[in-house]
Length: 353
Image 1 (cartoon, rainbow, N blue to C red):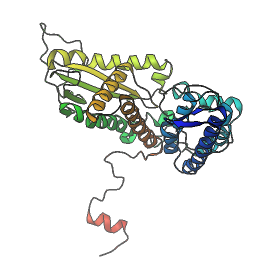
Image 2 (cartoon, rainbow, N blue to C red):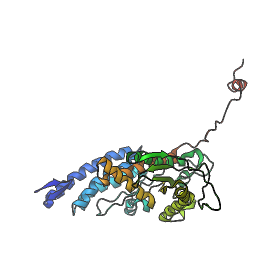
Image 3 (cartoon, one colour):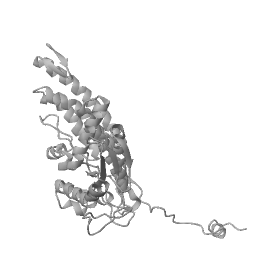
Image 4 (cartoon, rainbow, N blue to C red):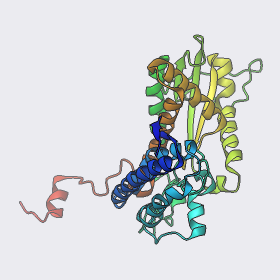
């Protein structure tokens, strides 16, 4: 056997390349088996570790080493017989179900591609796994479902995903921009016949999410506002995901665009994300620009920084989805039994003077 490893792949005779891949597959299969043990108690974290980290190792070899599909069969067996059943709590998938799991998340799959098939995995955020024993009723009184949990406002949990994405982005902007401000107040609007505004939000208490200087170059101010929506909500489920993204971008432009341009004399960009993963067009352009600036400052590869940034966004949405599905929805600021006097406490505790 003649050959040698080269940049994570192998070059040389067919026998050497095959033996190289076989050894790699043994190690990857053991790692998938180890990860499956974590999936028993932390399925979401195990899924993210698999799709964002572990699978990229054999995907690189799959792209660079030709004609090695058969050597990946032990790895596919480990994924199909151990990892997926542990992750989903179901029996090993059939051939048709396995192909569905291989679809990207935006098409309803899990993005766990089949290593024995020569294909390129498309990037997609994780799809949220449903709890095995969800409650029948939500704290608000409605029937509980994943769709309802991602939208139910009781307890303020859906707003947390907006705040987490906003704070993460603002923190990264401080690395590359000046005068980063979170939730800046807009200047009051003086409406008149000579100066009408078509914007729908003219309140004096209106705020943006983030304002920075120097993001697109120059010193002019750039204003951003975030929206994270549930694509399964009744108002969104009847439309395609791409049209839903455009709809929410237009809503934010109508609400703030003209006011920011004409009163604040700044530029406005809505950052729209789906709660199950995915970015609207303007958000995609924004985060690519942010990754470029970060890569330049950190002296790292743009692709590495962009992948890391997408992973951070993915985990932020993941934490928010887990909290919406499994978090407690109690009434904000309400305590069910508030003693009104010392006598009340005495009676309730069965004490006598």
